[in-house]
Image 1 (cartoon, rainbow, N blue to C red):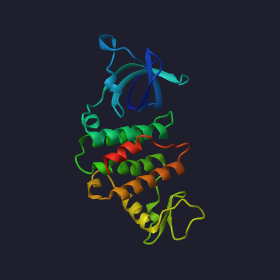
Image 2: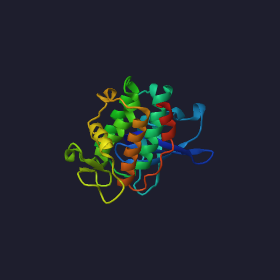
Image 3: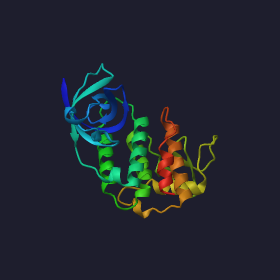
Image 4: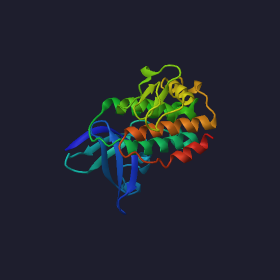
Length: 241
Protein backbone atom coordinates (compact mmCIF):
# COMPACT_ATOMS: atom_id res chain seq x y z
CA UNK A 1 0.00 0.00 0.00
CA UNK A 2 1.31 3.47 -0.90
CA UNK A 3 1.51 6.26 1.67
CA UNK A 4 2.41 9.93 1.42
CA UNK A 5 4.50 11.28 4.26
CA UNK A 6 7.41 13.61 4.97
CA UNK A 7 10.83 12.43 6.07
CA UNK A 8 14.16 13.74 7.35
CA UNK A 9 17.29 12.03 6.04
CA UNK A 10 19.52 10.80 8.89
CA UNK A 11 21.96 8.40 7.26
CA UNK A 12 22.58 6.52 4.02
CA UNK A 13 24.78 3.53 3.25
CA UNK A 14 25.44 1.44 0.11
CA UNK A 15 23.62 -1.90 0.12
CA UNK A 16 25.21 -3.31 -3.05
CA UNK A 17 26.09 -2.03 -6.52
CA UNK A 18 22.43 -1.42 -7.38
CA UNK A 19 20.88 -0.10 -4.17
CA UNK A 20 21.57 1.88 -1.03
CA UNK A 21 19.71 2.10 2.27
CA UNK A 22 18.48 5.42 3.61
CA UNK A 23 17.55 5.82 7.27
CA UNK A 24 14.94 8.51 7.83
CA UNK A 25 12.81 9.94 10.55
CA UNK A 26 9.33 10.17 9.08
CA UNK A 27 6.27 12.13 10.11
CA UNK A 28 3.92 9.12 10.03
CA UNK A 29 6.10 6.08 10.79
CA UNK A 30 8.92 7.33 13.01
CA UNK A 31 12.32 5.80 12.24
CA UNK A 32 12.26 3.88 8.96
CA UNK A 33 14.77 2.41 6.49
CA UNK A 34 14.22 2.59 2.75
CA UNK A 35 15.89 0.84 -0.16
CA UNK A 36 16.57 3.11 -3.12
CA UNK A 37 17.94 2.34 -6.57
CA UNK A 38 21.51 3.52 -7.15
CA UNK A 39 20.88 4.35 -10.81
CA UNK A 40 21.97 7.70 -12.20
CA UNK A 41 20.95 9.99 -15.02
CA UNK A 42 17.61 9.79 -16.79
CA UNK A 43 16.84 6.34 -15.38
CA UNK A 44 16.89 7.61 -11.81
CA UNK A 45 13.52 8.57 -10.32
CA UNK A 46 15.14 11.11 -8.00
CA UNK A 47 18.47 12.79 -7.46
CA UNK A 48 20.99 11.40 -5.02
CA UNK A 49 21.32 15.00 -3.84
CA UNK A 50 17.93 14.58 -2.16
CA UNK A 51 19.58 12.12 0.22
CA UNK A 52 21.91 14.65 1.84
CA UNK A 53 21.86 14.62 5.68
CA UNK A 54 18.88 16.48 7.18
CA UNK A 55 17.18 16.92 3.81
CA UNK A 56 13.42 17.24 4.37
CA UNK A 57 11.54 15.27 1.72
CA UNK A 58 8.00 14.74 0.54
CA UNK A 59 7.71 10.99 0.01
CA UNK A 60 5.48 8.42 -1.54
CA UNK A 61 6.45 5.10 0.01
CA UNK A 62 5.50 1.49 0.34
CA UNK A 63 5.21 0.76 4.03
CA UNK A 64 4.49 -2.61 5.63
CA UNK A 65 4.76 -2.94 9.41
CA UNK A 66 6.28 -6.42 9.18
CA UNK A 67 9.04 -5.34 6.79
CA UNK A 68 12.37 -3.98 8.05
CA UNK A 69 13.32 -2.19 4.83
CA UNK A 70 10.67 -0.24 2.97
CA UNK A 71 10.67 1.19 -0.57
CA UNK A 72 10.39 4.75 -1.87
CA UNK A 73 8.34 5.29 -5.01
CA UNK A 74 8.86 9.05 -5.27
CA UNK A 75 10.78 11.72 -3.39
CA UNK A 76 11.11 15.46 -3.79
CA UNK A 77 12.38 18.22 -1.52
CA UNK A 78 9.85 19.71 0.86
CA UNK A 79 12.05 22.81 1.02
CA UNK A 80 15.30 23.86 -0.65
CA UNK A 81 18.48 24.14 1.40
CA UNK A 82 21.65 25.86 0.24
CA UNK A 83 23.56 27.10 3.29
CA UNK A 84 23.43 23.74 5.09
CA UNK A 85 25.76 22.20 2.53
CA UNK A 86 27.75 25.20 1.25
CA UNK A 87 28.64 26.98 4.48
CA UNK A 88 31.46 25.00 6.18
CA UNK A 89 30.22 25.68 9.73
CA UNK A 90 26.59 24.85 8.95
CA UNK A 91 27.62 21.75 7.02
CA UNK A 92 29.67 20.49 9.98
CA UNK A 93 26.72 21.10 12.32
CA UNK A 94 24.43 19.30 9.86
CA UNK A 95 26.68 16.22 9.86
CA UNK A 96 26.93 16.28 13.66
CA UNK A 97 23.16 16.60 14.19
CA UNK A 98 22.27 13.95 11.61
CA UNK A 99 24.69 11.47 13.20
CA UNK A 100 23.39 12.31 16.68
CA UNK A 101 19.76 11.82 15.63
CA UNK A 102 20.63 8.60 13.81
CA UNK A 103 22.05 7.24 17.08
CA UNK A 104 19.28 8.58 19.32
CA UNK A 105 16.01 8.01 17.48
CA UNK A 106 15.01 4.35 17.30
CA UNK A 107 11.22 4.42 17.78
CA UNK A 108 9.24 3.17 14.79
CA UNK A 109 6.14 5.17 15.57
CA UNK A 110 4.96 8.70 14.86
CA UNK A 111 5.90 11.53 17.19
CA UNK A 112 4.57 14.69 15.56
CA UNK A 113 5.90 17.18 18.15
CA UNK A 114 9.42 15.77 17.74
CA UNK A 115 9.16 15.71 13.95
CA UNK A 116 7.90 19.30 13.88
CA UNK A 117 10.71 20.40 16.20
CA UNK A 118 13.33 18.81 13.95
CA UNK A 119 11.90 20.40 10.80
CA UNK A 120 11.70 23.80 12.49
CA UNK A 121 15.29 23.50 13.73
CA UNK A 122 16.69 22.49 10.34
CA UNK A 123 14.96 25.41 8.65
CA UNK A 124 16.30 27.74 11.34
CA UNK A 125 19.86 26.54 10.79
CA UNK A 126 19.48 27.23 7.06
CA UNK A 127 18.53 30.90 7.56
CA UNK A 128 20.45 31.73 10.77
CA UNK A 129 23.13 34.39 10.40
CA UNK A 130 24.13 34.89 14.05
CA UNK A 131 24.94 32.59 16.97
CA UNK A 132 25.81 29.67 14.67
CA UNK A 133 28.52 28.45 17.06
CA UNK A 134 25.79 27.93 19.68
CA UNK A 135 23.26 26.21 17.41
CA UNK A 136 24.19 22.63 18.34
CA UNK A 137 24.08 23.53 22.04
CA UNK A 138 20.63 25.04 21.63
CA UNK A 139 19.43 22.09 19.58
CA UNK A 140 20.51 19.48 22.13
CA UNK A 141 19.16 21.38 25.15
CA UNK A 142 15.75 21.73 23.50
CA UNK A 143 15.78 18.20 22.05
CA UNK A 144 16.01 16.80 25.59
CA UNK A 145 12.46 18.07 26.19
CA UNK A 146 11.07 16.06 23.26
CA UNK A 147 12.97 12.96 24.37
CA UNK A 148 11.53 13.20 27.88
CA UNK A 149 14.89 13.77 29.58
CA UNK A 150 14.91 17.54 30.06
CA UNK A 151 16.82 18.61 33.21
CA UNK A 152 14.75 20.03 36.07
CA UNK A 153 15.65 23.73 36.06
CA UNK A 154 13.05 24.44 38.76
CA UNK A 155 15.34 22.76 41.29
CA UNK A 156 18.05 25.39 40.72
CA UNK A 157 19.13 27.64 43.57
CA UNK A 158 22.29 29.74 43.78
CA UNK A 159 25.17 27.57 44.96
CA UNK A 160 23.61 24.23 44.00
CA UNK A 161 25.36 21.69 41.79
CA UNK A 162 23.83 19.79 38.91
CA UNK A 163 23.47 16.04 39.27
CA UNK A 164 23.84 14.69 35.71
CA UNK A 165 22.60 11.24 36.62
CA UNK A 166 19.33 12.39 38.24
CA UNK A 167 18.82 15.55 36.18
CA UNK A 168 18.36 17.89 39.15
CA UNK A 169 20.19 20.65 41.02
CA UNK A 170 21.08 19.71 44.58
CA UNK A 171 22.83 21.07 47.68
CA UNK A 172 24.47 17.76 48.54
CA UNK A 173 27.30 16.05 46.69
CA UNK A 174 25.87 12.94 44.97
CA UNK A 175 27.20 9.50 45.86
CA UNK A 176 28.61 9.18 42.32
CA UNK A 177 30.93 11.13 40.02
CA UNK A 178 28.38 12.32 37.46
CA UNK A 179 27.85 15.92 38.58
CA UNK A 180 29.03 19.41 37.65
CA UNK A 181 30.97 21.87 39.77
CA UNK A 182 29.10 24.85 41.17
CA UNK A 183 30.61 27.11 38.50
CA UNK A 184 29.67 24.69 35.72
CA UNK A 185 26.20 24.30 37.18
CA UNK A 186 25.57 28.07 36.91
CA UNK A 187 26.40 27.96 33.20
CA UNK A 188 24.31 24.82 32.69
CA UNK A 189 21.25 26.39 34.32
CA UNK A 190 21.66 29.53 32.24
CA UNK A 191 21.73 27.44 29.07
CA UNK A 192 18.44 25.78 29.96
CA UNK A 193 16.88 29.07 28.83
CA UNK A 194 18.65 29.22 25.47
CA UNK A 195 16.62 29.19 22.25
CA UNK A 196 17.18 29.98 18.59
CA UNK A 197 16.04 33.59 19.05
CA UNK A 198 18.52 34.40 21.84
CA UNK A 199 21.42 32.02 21.11
CA UNK A 200 23.51 34.83 19.60
CA UNK A 201 23.53 36.57 23.00
CA UNK A 202 25.43 33.69 24.66
CA UNK A 203 29.20 34.11 24.43
CA UNK A 204 31.70 31.42 25.42
CA UNK A 205 35.41 30.87 25.17
CA UNK A 206 36.76 27.90 23.23
CA UNK A 207 37.24 25.91 26.44
CA UNK A 208 33.83 26.83 27.86
CA UNK A 209 32.01 25.72 24.73
CA UNK A 210 34.00 22.46 24.62
CA UNK A 211 33.14 21.78 28.28
CA UNK A 212 29.44 22.56 27.75
CA UNK A 213 28.97 20.20 24.83
CA UNK A 214 30.94 17.52 26.67
CA UNK A 215 28.56 17.85 29.64
CA UNK A 216 25.49 17.73 27.39
CA UNK A 217 26.70 14.58 25.64
CA UNK A 218 27.53 13.02 29.02
CA UNK A 219 24.00 13.80 30.16
CA UNK A 220 22.55 12.17 27.06
CA UNK A 221 24.77 9.14 27.52
CA UNK A 222 23.50 8.70 31.08
CA UNK A 223 19.84 8.96 30.09
CA UNK A 224 19.70 7.19 26.74
CA UNK A 225 20.45 3.55 26.03
CA UNK A 226 23.51 2.73 23.91
CA UNK A 227 24.38 6.33 23.05
CA UNK A 228 27.87 6.09 21.49
CA UNK A 229 30.68 8.53 20.79
CA UNK A 230 29.66 10.87 17.96
CA UNK A 231 32.48 10.71 15.42
CA UNK A 232 31.61 13.95 13.60
CA UNK A 233 31.79 15.96 16.83
CA UNK A 234 35.57 16.49 16.61
CA UNK A 235 35.28 17.90 13.08
CA UNK A 236 32.56 20.33 14.10
CA UNK A 237 34.42 21.48 17.21
CA UNK A 238 37.53 22.30 15.20
CA UNK A 239 35.59 24.86 13.15
CA UNK A 240 34.55 26.81 16.25
CA UNK A 241 37.91 26.75 18.04
